[in-house]
Length: 101
Image (tube, rainbow, N blue to C red):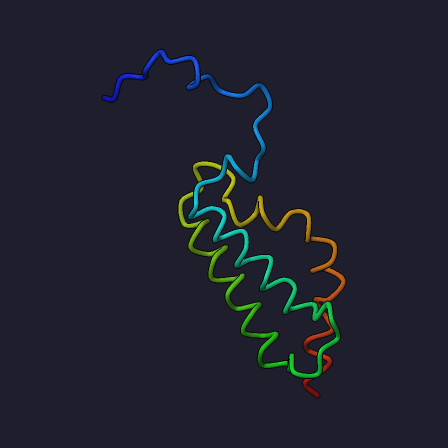
């Protein structure tokens, strides 16, 4: 075990910014999921974001959720990160399938 030093500059701040409190891996996961959501809902209405690209973004989200929920000891991080986007995802759920036909 590492011993904590008693230096004054090691004191934890009273309010912790959640972005700064996340590990690098968590930040990357959150960024990847947010990028996928943005691609999936095609926020910019870009013509280059085709249905196959949107489906690939959905596949990445599903894969992240499945791998994180394989052992349910706590709320999986992908679910925490996607929670603010849930309503938007629900609204766009049917639109991808409709674009194919």
